[in-house]
Length: 202
Image (cartoon, rainbow, N blue to C red; front, side, top):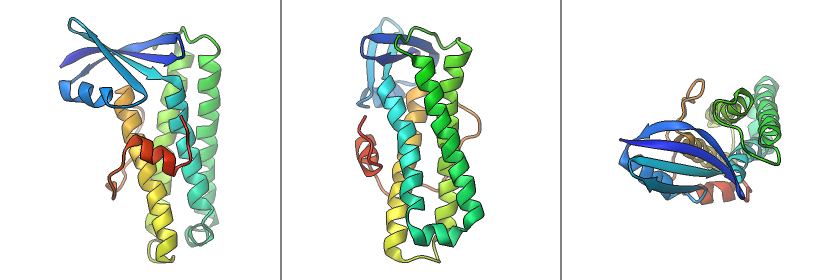
């Protein structure tokens, strides 16, 4: 296990998030992510995360909602109450993204111990997990009620979102709120492929 410093970076601005113990394999996996830079000095590994990448993950969640609910057959199959629940979750995620942007500001210098900054980061991941769980339930409920082409479009968007949630959880190496109970991802894709499917350019 390695001691890891987790840092957010936006351009030349850096903000120390905290420390975590990561296995060498986890560090190697993080190093492979385009939004993450890993440097090691002695026994301490510093993980630098792009702020833009975090924002991209949140945006991916919002776009997943738009993609799936825009399929009329899916929205009709799950019903108005379920649609309202999903839209509420998406609204919470949108608010979390706004809070994160406000916390980051033009000069990201706050630490992980800063309550407002920590809350903003935690909220994005927690709300992203909730959105993924709600969409997972919706797609599951619509499986036998919609055409295969509609289901394929929704499933692809959902699998892309699951990928983003997994990457985000690994990137921050923090456990926030309840972990989403999602069905296994049905397709193998990279972070870049998932973002592309969800029409996000980090």
